Image (cartoon, rainbow over all chains, first blue to last red; front, side, top):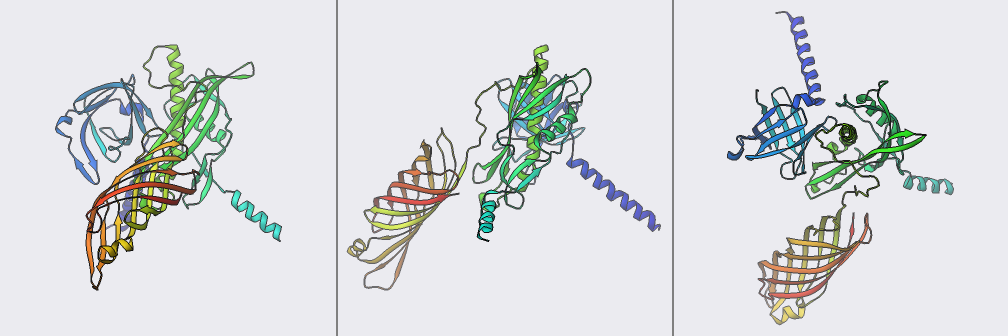
Length: 134
Length: 358
């Protein structure tokens, strides 16, 4: 058994995990990372995951590069415009009716997007989306 | 020596200490902007972010560190890179402050307000091209029973809300500039010049009250109460109320009914509604369910008789809160109630209350 090598390996591992944690805290979001179609996967609330309701199984968000979006929420189709606030870590969507919603981004990855709808009754639920492959 | 003491007292009561907030700027996507920020001018009357509790629970004046023009200039320079073909824009800070208040018994709300004028210089004068007022609001879970003065997450994210508001204003200006050139999709709405926008959050009142029954048909007594509500100038206010009531049935009446004494301790959950009549004066109505225990003793016996009480009550009155921040609260209320007591089932009366808000 080569002790120094193990120690080195251990140090590298801890360094890597610290580094990745740091990355996690200061995640930077880009418009190009969002311009995809995202389908609703699940909800997370108070330590538990919940599947979408029956009328929500086809729900999705599609952010287009021209800053318009289409979304299916509870089976209903919505259209409008969107913007990304990098410093605020949120997406603001404006429906064609003029109403606004703020989606706080908890996580944005290559294949997954986790947001919180900043509105009463929804504020404490994470909404998980998965990217739809084109 | 006395003079020294006086100076000390004066400075300790008027000289609040300061705390500084640093912006942890993240560059944002503004690559297609046709301008950069040439100068930031602070035209605020009060050049700080307001009085807030810091992480130690002390009330301090919050300021941007470095001073606002430098901090905002640094923020802008991270994303709006200066190149020779770009136009220099002068940025006026009309408003930049922080507010927070409780919004219900479970949550607080925190707001950063930014009011910026994007100007160009023509013949030595600043000409406003675009103005944007932005409120960045965020709600935090914080039960009223936590009793803490500072919610750590809220305090630490003040700087992020300022950054978010600044970014929002710049993105709106970028869109405004592109919009006048070509017909793109528009998302932002600029604020018209000189428009009176109210950015103040409504105030949350905490009131502790002592209530005294002035007159009633059958009972006398007093109560201690807590009321919490979010002020609103227009709509109906639903406050949170909790009252603990102690009363005795009037002695002559109790004796006439064959009792040595009849006492009761009650809680009074209910639904109340306030409506602001004038600033500081609220009309109040309510229905409630008196719940509690009655203890009574028949004449010529030594045994206490306990009885569970339940009923229904109503009240109509006025509440006067002359000082918004801290101070005295006065109230007067008519009440009516029906309950399952064997001594009296219906009662009406008038109650006076005095308390303080904080």
